[in-house]
Amino acid sequence: MDYKTIMCDVLVVGAGGAGCRAAIEASNHNLDVIMLSKELLGKAHTAMAEGGYNVSLGNVDPDDDPETHFKDTIVGGNYLNDQKLAEILVRDAPQRIFDLEDMGAVFDRTPEGKIAQRVFGKQSWRRTAYASDRTGSEIMVTLTEGIRKTAVRVFDEVFATRLLVKDGKISGVCAVDLKYGDYLVFRAKSVVMATGGAGRIFSVTSNAQLDVGDGYGMAYETGCEMIDMEMIQFHPTGMVKPESAKGRLVTEAVRGEGGILLNSKGERFMNRYYPEVMELAGRDQVARSIMTEVLEGRGTPDGGVYLSISHLPHSIIEFRLESMIEQFEDAGVDIREEPMQVSPTAHHFMGGIKIDENSGTNIPGLFASGECTGGVHGGNRLGGNALADTQVFGALSGENAAKYAKETDNLGVNREEIKNEFERLEAMLKRKEGISPADARSELTELMWAKVQIFRKEDDMQYAVKELRRIEKEVVPKIKVDVPVKRFNPGWHQAMEFVNMVTTARMVAEAAVMRKGSRGAHYRVDDDPNDKGYYNIVIRKGKDGKMDLRKEDVVATKITPP
Ligand SMILES: Cc1cc2nc3c(=O)[nH]c(=O)nc-3n(C[C@H](O)[C@H](O)[C@H](O)COP(=O)(O)OP(=O)(O)OC[C@H]3O[C@@H](n4cnc5c(N)ncnc54)[C@H](O)[C@@H]3O)c2cc1C
Image (cartoon, rainbow, N blue to C red; front, side, top):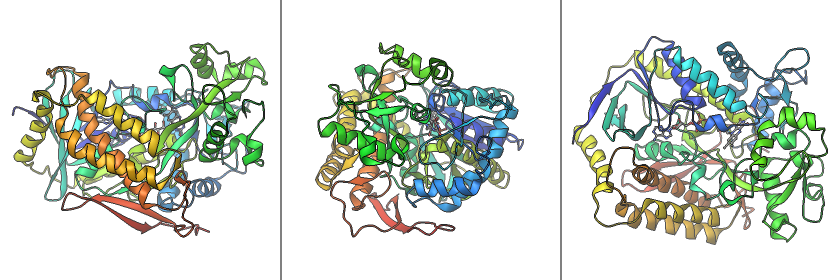
């Protein structure tokens, strides 16, 4: 099996907000840094982020401070957060937004010229800094410009497929160059995983096409510990129509700016569920309220509810929600005059690779940051905390990966392991008969949407687990790519992704079955009142190849759970 070997000091897998920030930080240490991404530089999912970045600057509400941001994050996370990580988030978020400004990012301003801050759900103060409703795009443009000013070598349209470990330590990554179909081995002293989330394991999602959970699959296969995988945030407001845009995000900023939710009877139904905070209740709370309205027959004919902002002056909507206007114009709705139709959509993974205060994992030399990690947000993430997470932990992972690389030599790699990996990928192309990756993906995403959704129950989830185990055993080994070419072949890419989707979905479903009580975003219709403990579920691939799950006490260093 032919492959090309590329050496470097630090390898960053992923070029979203976290990956770019990690690569910039690592390159400040005068090291040879490589950054890989499946898509072209600048196109990562982070560019889709809309509403903003949480940071307790106190520019609009002077009483805000990191302590209150911390408290809101822990309460929002239903006390399942690793509090040491949450402390780092709130401590470093201010400096990291100033870094972005230094690199050229332009955020909206207050009349006095300070960074403006808006209100987001479940937060004590107006804390969310923003650039209209295109905050992620502003951050990505800034970071990609930042990357171009460094010596970071960017390999875009390169798909990492396997982490390589030698003597228990990270030693590199196997990958495929999607443009030419070449096999590549990157040998590195340290690796940062910044591969984003996996909303795409659900058929209705706000996530970018590539968010399928490669990082979760690769990390799990390598023996990395994973945490809180059952905790999926369903954003309350995704588009309902047209079908092609189903699930696309309608930013929380719409409600933050004063948008109201109405059912088909014209009732402002949040009054029934969370009268004190109304539309600005937690995302899980609003999502469940909407679903209840729909299930009880008070939804729109298309299965959603209405979100209206038309009572606000046109000028405010045009200035602060510009992309929402464009997004709905495409669907034939003028949000300045008419209500939007919305319903919940799979949005964010709170769980992921378990990291420590250095952004390190249980595998020496392997670091991780951004949405592919777990622990920072506990059982539920506050809107605006994810962008801050990408910058805070992106920088931390880059710095610590660089420090580690400086003290380490390149380790060898196991040629047999590499050969097996590329043969596994090649087999998908060579199989004469088998199952199409597109069909297999639809089956999986529909299964997850139907059985492991917002309202969860034992029978449904047991069914999902059984089916996922069957898919892993019977479908994965039979995946066959229709056209057996290696140069830019989307069918092959889908097949490679599918394997990681199955592993990710299994971790989600198995952990969801294990947690019998409702907590955070994990809401059980058949809630077991005896399973109310504050624990995390940690998953690891066992020596026998089985998925091991165990409960661990939460890291509660400052606030004791009630
Ligand atoms: C529509 C939408 C709006 C949002 N708005 C906000 C908001 O306003 N505020 C907020 O705080 N959060 C928001 N979020 C959440 C936030 O955008 C994400 O959590 C965050 O951007 C994730 O950044 P990341 O760097 O971890 O991953 P991503 O930006 O997803 O980047 C992942 C990178 O990994 C690469 N990658 C993945 N697998 C591989 C592989 N196998 N090989 C090579 N490369 C790979 C991808 O190509 C990509 O470059 C929003 C989310 C959505 C879906």
